[in-house]
Length: 314
Ligand SMILES: [Zn+2]
Image (cartoon, rainbow, N blue to C red; front, side, top):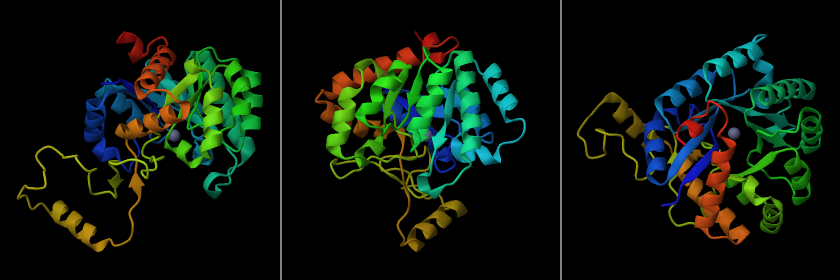
């Protein structure tokens, strides 16, 4: 079985938090050895920390995501630093810049200030930083040039930039991480871009619970649908479908299922990284085994900073 490393996900997300034990078990069973779980606001850093203490496979990452900069407290940076002090195995993320995804308008001056402070912190701590960038690659490059270079790595997560951008970011120490979002990019453009990325800088991720890979080309994608059902093939121990248990919650969820004719949001989870692997390998014209091995070794190298769990596990 191939080994895989989910270089960027959000298992602390409230939409999937209660399913984490099953999601991790299934992912581990299909060869996913590590999960870099990225916090996004001051409010979820403790959940990420707890998860990393419960699961040896979870690499904690703490960061303030650009979508949440307006709700930061005056002490956000000192709180963040405390999390790093008490969690030597942590990396930085998710941080970044966003000029208008999903119609969000967040003061860009604020975003830049918060991003720069966290990027400087990552450099000072000698940890990789997981970066979100939407329509702001020019600003990102400028800031990375002024703060960098980054010998400990910067992960451009769910990268959807062009082939032309790759060399400059690469020179500064960037890794390029690919998720199901890549399937939304024109195939010829994605192929050209992928082929421009140095082999030792390629990573794979799910960004779960977002970025569900498109399932058109695949036979058996296991989605998580809604809040009250498990992905196909998943069972909570002692609560299988044949049980006669009539707990109120079970009745309630049955009612909810019957009542909901409207489509439910479909959520992603780490085991779906296999579909990302399949897609990226096909565009790179590599075997899945070869890409799995390459991206896994890249992730191990990147996450082997001082204090890291990866390093401790050898
Ligand atoms: Zn993310």
